[in-house]
Length: 126
View 1 (cartoon, rainbow, N blue to C red):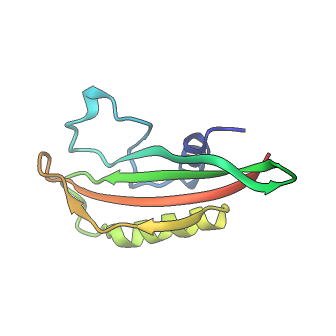
View 2: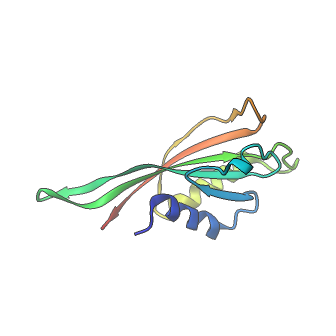
């Protein structure tokens, strides 16, 4: 079984999201921290705990992933981040992930990038 972040990264890549330039797992490399010309998605694991408890054991895992989107500073005028996020969440839901939380948009004080955070979860049998 792949790590939860790897599973979501595979899905995101399969979705062919033209508005996402780079997908990183666990951390953004130092050389890309100040990049404001690309839209970057950061995937971090939030949960990997036993699930489907029965007969003094577990038969699955509860997996959670935090998705952070750092939008490039100069977005195209016809690009609607909210529509893109809704489409992403619908695609993740169709792939078996539950949308736990979709946080408000915020602004990074250092780079002036719009940031969006989404939390998803999925229980999987092992």
